[in-house]
Length: 169
Image (cartoon, rainbow, N blue to C red; front, side, top):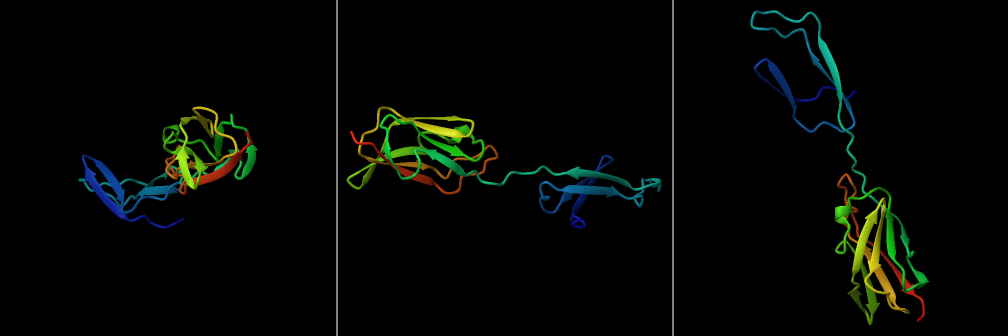
């Protein structure tokens, strides 16, 4: 429906190859036609045109989103033995989710100190487990790096950040 596709044709050993001038649009049906105007070396041509269709692969270009966190942004009285988790809108590339791309930081005296811990990932949820209980009566910030990607390689795009306060000691 978009008209003709511009490109070039090469021919070698009885095989013609069409190379589009630009990338074909993904998720689109294209119809190719070899007309009966072609001739072999003896001047013979096919009786009819030959047509066939191909559909280009649909490419996922939609970036993932954070759909929920636990604890939620601005939660108060969060238990000190919590595991911090984030859920994404789709399955993610687990190799991009680790202690570098998912960090939890304690805010104290106007500065942030990264907590040590481990990160795991399952289905659509990443979980940060602190090495030890976090401290009470403190403000914490969790950050997911913009470089985490879904299975198609789409990055989150912007870092995702949320904060929470722990319960009194």
